[in-house]
Amino acid sequence: MDQAFCGQIKGKVQGVFFRVSIQRKACELGLTGWCRNTSEGHVEILIAGKVTGLRPMCDWLNIGPQLARVDLAELNLCENPGLKSFEIRH
Image (tube, rainbow, N blue to C red; front, side):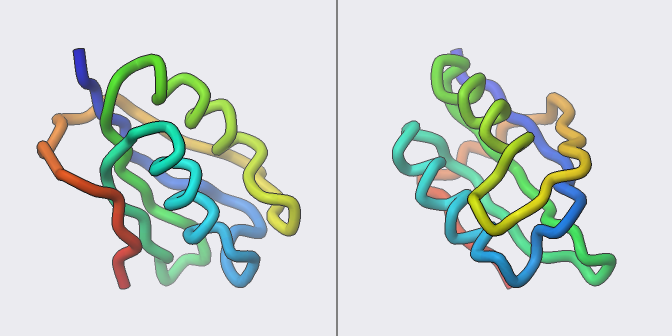
């Protein structure tokens, strides 16, 4: 069964290739959704797919890529919008 999570990633998450890394990881795990920077300096995200992909993605979001520093990953269950790919929004 497909599920979806949405929320924000806080910390040093802008200017460190976080969104590109999220997109790569999501594609690697067969997930769909989107991410974008916020004016507050966070990254907003919606990820959807099978639990077998969402679990490792949520774990990874608490760590992030090498140059990032994740202080808090706030993710909540949300409605799956049925997207077909993962995109970086602006």
